Image (cartoon, rainbow, N blue to C red; front, side, top):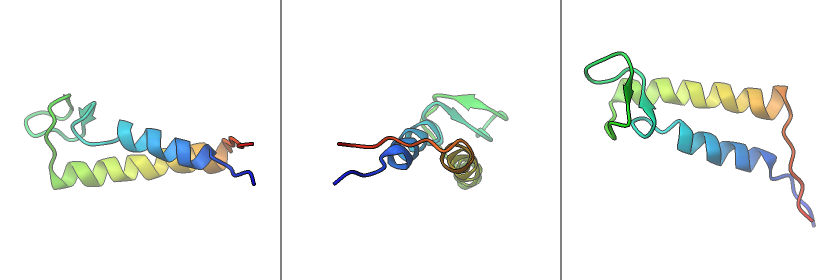
Length: 70
């Protein structure tokens, strides 16, 4: 039994990288972009969600990343 782990890996990595406040926050609380402030806002969550789905679509559908197991 083998499965395609590419979409799972891409989704997990993007989820961590696109978490608002972890690496950066768009828009920030005080500035347009803030780095590593570990805070978030509703508009920041919305912006990061759009970025997540855009990048996930590019990596999974347009580029077609596939990782097969055993």
